[in-house]
Each structure stands twice: as structure tokens, then as C-alpha cells.
Length: 344
Image (tube, rainbow, N blue to C red; front, side, top):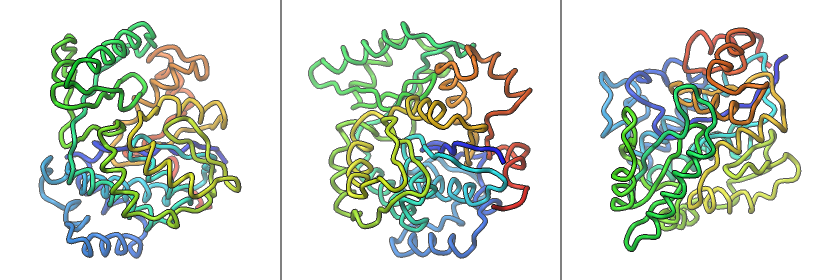
């Protein structure tokens, strides 16, 4: 049986192509009904009504209170659908941490939904600041430390200007996700050359993983008690690269991190995946749905870490074609390789 690290996606992964994916793939009708009851109790739109819509709307499906719940449900459903794979660790990108908590057993499936749904709603209600994305690697995905350092110096210089707020939000493989207030984001856009569609503003995204989110974190701590959390059954790697081990995790500390640092400090997805690779040396890295947009970022992290001697995109593509190491469950042929065997 192959071993795997399970990597849960964050916001922005449920888009037009993903319409209907929850209804097609979620394996537990009873659990989905519990999620729907939570939504109804909070006077929120039904997940299945969103998922079965005839067309995708960024103003509807992309809202934090809708997107977070859809993405959590799709990711957890894919975890529950795995067969013939031994998951040795879980991690996630940004709000994917909430999904990872449930996959690992540190939150029950329903409590995980409550955390993801509540934080998505609070983020949407506050909608403080915004985010943009900018590449730090070229088309060949080769690591470029000098370019990364120069861009981060620019971020620090902008943040030092009166009235401007800008900070690293997520280190996402070959991309930097930056967050701040409108003047800070605009200053970065003005100071950097356009590269295709970048710098790219992220619609309906607040200044996640920065100090601007402290009011949201405080509301989250008031709404979600520490007794929701328990010992994980599978090791978890958080947005600092820290590993939470089964049998030695303090639930209060996990609550503190999840509704504190995870909300208000930069999320180092690159470090999380790098530590997962080096600590657990899995056969596979599995990315659940919705979508498959996180695959490139994971590949870029592994290249940067020189995993299996990869140094560029061509190396990754060659290795992936010979001995696949990355499975995106949002792609039907790849999904079939980890869901159609004997359930364990």
C-alpha cells in the first residue's frame, strides 16, 4: 500500500469548472445533511443549491461564507473516498488547515465544518483589506532566491510608508500571496512589471494571514470553543511547518494556533509541504478537490526542496510521467488511482 501526504486546498479553488463536483463526489449523504442543517440554522444558502446552480457566479460562489463551506466539504469528501492508500500526514493551504484538522481527526467532520463555515462567514462580514498574487519563478519553475528576496524587500519598503499596509500572506511555492490595505496593494502593483495576468488581485479575498485580521480572529475565538478540538489520529503540519503529533498534542494550544497565529500571521505553505516531504517521505502527495489549481504550487515546492533531485518543471514532468508522485483528485483519471481500490 502506498503512503501519502494529503494536502487540502484553500480559498479560490471552487470555480465554474467545479460546479456539481460536491454532488458527484461526496460519499456520505448523512454527513452532508448535517452540513446542510448547520447552514440552514445560520440562514445560509444550501450547499447543494450552490453546487447545482446552472451557472457560476463569483459574487455568489466566491463569497467567503459560501466558498469556505464548499471547499471544506469537497476536500473532506475526497479524504473519506480514499482507498488503498495510507495517509501518513495531512497539511493544507490557508483555510485548507481547517479541512486538514478534520481529516486528521483533531476536529470531528461536523466540528470541522463549523470552524470552516464560521471563519468563512466572519471573514466575509469583515472583509478587511485584500490579496494579490505575484510569481517568484519563471516558466521553468526554477527556484530564484534573489528574485524572492528582492520582492520581499519591496514589500517591506512599501509597508514602512505612512498609511500603507502590506505583508506576505502566503509563501505558495512559486508564488507570493501578498495582503494589505488598498494603498499598500496599489503601491505594489505600481512598482512591479506586469507578467501576463500578474500582479493578480483575488476577488472576495481579505488580507488573510496578516495583523489586519485580528478582529476576525477575536470573533472566531469567541464563537468557537477549545473543546471542539482533540488529539489528532494522523500527524498534521501547520502553516509554520510545525508538526502536531498524535498522542502529544495539547488541544488548547491547537485552538490557540488555529484561531490566532493561523489567522493573523503569514502562512508558510512552502515550509509545510517541504517538512511533510522530508519528515514522512511519502510515495504520493494527494490534493483533494475542488479543482486542481494547487498542483502547480506543490510541484514548485518540491522542486525548491530538490525533492528526488528535481530542479525545474521539466524534471517534475518527467518524474510524474514515469512514477507519478502527485495526485490531483479534481482530475478524474488521477482520482481513480486512489479511490477505486479496496477501502481500508
